[in-house]
Length: 308
Length: 225
Image (cartoon, rainbow over all chains, first blue to last red; front, side, top):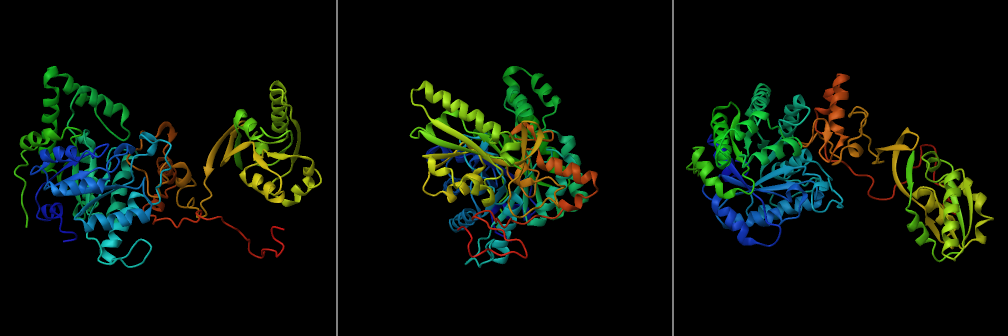
């Protein structure tokens, strides 16, 4: 065991992992975090706690992570390179581990231009690849990035993202290989809608032997509405929403669109369960946490396994 | 070259508010080429200031001179005999030139008339684009001659990120993705192996004021005098 987190145990035991996501509030509303967490408890193996996602200021990811621990969930602490230099990152990692955080997701982060402080100076002292290497060095060598010793090194299960759909497609698997070489333990992918492209990506990852070295969790976000599908297709960089997805949603009664979205997500999950190299699913039900129990039920991933 | 743009007129006017006799010093090198602070721009700005202050019934006596380079002591010397006549100096040089001028005449207020913007290239007359952040550790040999520090909005050393949007950057559809360009160029040169290795965390060398002394040279004892 590298970190001994629940997520690591589930994956190591060969179970099909199921992780969720929770966005911290834009203020100090602890009840909001607890409310969202209540829907996820028992439904997921670990829950990603986003870090100022879309470059909008929110409650610190480590703080919301601690709240979900109190609520009986295991957090996957997200950290972006946009807001902190290597000193702040490492001290946050020490603090997070000390207080019980065992999983981390290492991300570059959305550019600050998108958020509520577009005037901010982006830090990007290191990038996501270098962040992975830094956490690994702290864990496995007991050394800070600068080379000095860490007293009682933090044992973190290291995650990162992969977007199989952004250009250039044929380079994406090599970038995944670089993350594996940097020391990542698990990957959560961008939301998948173009299954054909994802199958190709996984084939390349399998052929390169990467799936023997890293657990890949396929990203799933159910479409809530036709508007959401159109928005994701047109406005979200690096997102690949084929026209047939929108057509399928348009083909059902207006009151059944969200249900159809969940149905499509469940069909995807069924395919991922059988897909070589896919170790689980990361469900990003954005501001739809209360639907997670229904989705988990319909996706037949319950009850969640318990591994000692 | 170093590219600058003139400050908004009202800001320059505000900087000069308390002065009645000012020398506007242009620079004949980078800022002249990029049409921000050469001889022509000095005379245009002076004419505008002269007119504006007349309208305000608060005339200013403003003269102009453009020297070859404000970042070079050799050329600044020409100003020694003149500056004493003025209450303040306005400089249209880059930030380095402005500071060198202020350093030479420490008792006289030296005020900037331009915002120094970047190290860039001349795409066409009047059109300039940034290309270098002078980071002191050039990786262009591995990145197909395209700088990820400057051209990637996140300055990633191991891109592209997941926001690449049809070959463009997630911040702006009109901004090409640096890493997409790097990939395409290296692929065309059969040199993709250059970016297969992880580039480790950068040793930032631009966090303190830097000095360069070329091999075979030394800092003279009279430096700065």
